[in-house]
Amino acid sequence: MLTELDRPAQIARVLPANPVVAIVGATGAVGVELLNCLEGRNFPVKALKLLASARSAGKTLPFRGQDVVIEELTEASFAGVDVALFSAGSGISKKFAPIAVRAGAIVVDNSSAFRMEANVPLIVPEANEAALSAHQGVIANPNCVAAIATTALAPLHRAHPIRRLSLVTYQAASGAGAAAMEELRLATEAALKGETYPHKVLPHPYAFNFFSHNADMDPETGYNGEESKVVAETRRILSLPELPVGITCIRVPILRAHGMAISVEFDRVVSPEEARALLGAAPGVKVVDDRARNYFPMPVDASGGEDVLVGRLRPDTADPSGKTLAMFVVGDQLLKGAAQNAVQIAERLLPQ
Image (cartoon, rainbow, N blue to C red; front, side, top):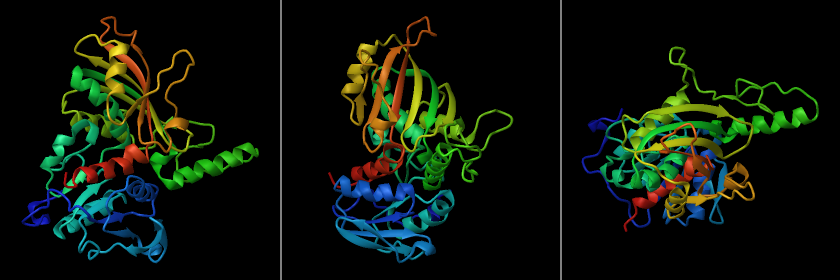
């Protein structure tokens, strides 16, 4: 938990026009995407610090035509840093985020360390940007499913309040990190050769298989940690603390981009046509809903893209009242589900 002792007397609420940026966990899958997003979105970086463990120190990563040397993460790493983008796990965030804030940096944290702290805003800019103004030095980046889902749900909720959600997710290897992506590659190669691959990163054989999300299971409730996080964070982002949410999270054998089948009940009947119009006008959303060609959101189209794809908009026939819509949503877990959302948060902190 972040306490008042963790914060300087004066906390910067916005960034300078050309901030000094640090990436914590620069060599991980999300860290590399953070670097790409800063470059691809032309974020105004005055200077860049790449921070990782001692074993990566001295290596380099390219940024805007130059090689940037990776430094070992230490308590002295944040001197002069204006914004620190963390993507190195909860333990690192809990230890070093308060140190970064004391040094004068604003922290955008991609881990689960601070997401449910009342004094740390949990932000998806397309959904709840206004909450950003309440930050006290640390801003939390949501779980990947919650970020992607609320990007699609927020424009609908603003027009017609949501009363209930049901989600089934189809989550890619990217959600478990670079090692899981590599395990999927190697396991698939082995399977195609008729060989057995001894899985090490994930708990079950991954090639041509899918299974319940590998987060720890609560034996009493029957829900795993990923499902619990998505429920709590979706409620918080949408400011619906009592929203009924049903969820099942599944790990599927694709490299990146998460899919989710969502049924959403509103306070009134909402037609697919109205939903398409609302979503089509929403930032960060692309409607892919071609019934004639049976063409709807797919990971192959979402991978590497910034937009959340939404389609298969239709009445949920399980609700005779007609107030429930079914849809399918796909977004790149490493981008909108992680790095891109963090950079978007940082962009909102720049002088307007």
